Length: 288
Image (cartoon, rainbow, N blue to C red; front, side, top):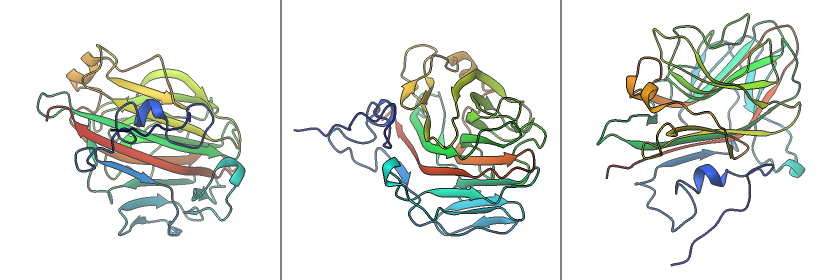
C-alpha cells in the first residue's frame, strides 16, 4: 500500500510540522482510522465576532474571554505570501492589562489527558502557528498550549508580568512575559496549588510580524525522560519534562483533562494585536 508524505514544513512553511503530526501517525501514512487517531485542526475560516467583556460560549465549542474594547474575530486580510487562509485575530488590546483568551471545549470539557498509567496511556500532540505585530517590553504576553477547561477567564495571566497566575489552572506549553517579551519559555503548572515551573528559559524568539509554530508531544512510550517534548518551527527542543516529574503528578498536570488554550494580556497602553493562523490537537491510545 502506498503512503502519503508531507512536504518539508519544519523551519518556515505554513503547514503542520512532520516531526509532530507525521512522526506520530496523526496524518499521512496509510490514512489511519480517524476514530482510533482523533485529530482536530482549525484554520479559523469561519470565526464569529466576540466583542463583549464577558465569557462567550458558542455552538462550535469555543469559549472566549475579553476585556471591554478587545475583540476576538476573523482577520479581515489574508496574505498569500505567508500562506494565510483563515486567521484568528485578537485586537483592540490597547490599554494596560487588556486581555483576550480563547479555548476549545466550551469551558467544560478537556479533549486530551496526559496520563502515564498503564491502560490509560495516550500520545498527545498540540501545535499552533501565531504571530504578533510588535514585540516590545510591556506589549502583549501570551500562554499557548494545553490548559484546564475554563482557562479563558478574567486574569488568566498576571497583570504586572504576564506570568501564569500562581496556583491558577493546569497548563503545559509556552509563555512569554513582560520583562523579556521576545523570549518564549516552555512551562507547566498544576492547578490549585502549584506555581509555574519553567522547563526552558528563552527556548525561542518572537520576531515582530513573523509567524512561528509552537508545538508539543507527550509520548508515554518514548525513551526515558523524553516523553514530554516541545517543538518550535518543527524542531524538537533539547529540554523535556522528566518522567519522574510526570509520575509524581505534584507539579505537572498528570491525569488532568486539558484543552487547547491561548491567553493574552497587554501590560501597558500599547496596541498589540496577536494572530493565530491555525491550531491542532490530537490523541490516541498506545494500550489498545
